[in-house]
Length: 74
Image (cartoon, rainbow, N blue to C red; front, top):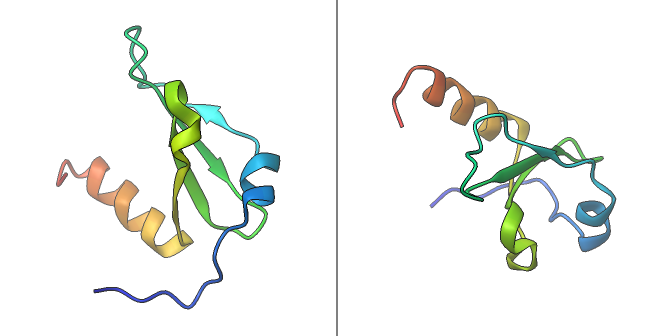
């Protein structure tokens, strides 16, 4: 289990975020959105069901995820 020292993200921070649709999103509504939050954390959510909320990541976690995707490790 990974424990984080970063504070939780507030709903207000998520609401105020500037969300961007992924350029990899398809035409079948299988879209995800990404935002860099005011706290420096990264957030990802499902475009078609925003009520589900968002997954948030520390900058280090986000960098590790992006590196893994670029290296096709995921």
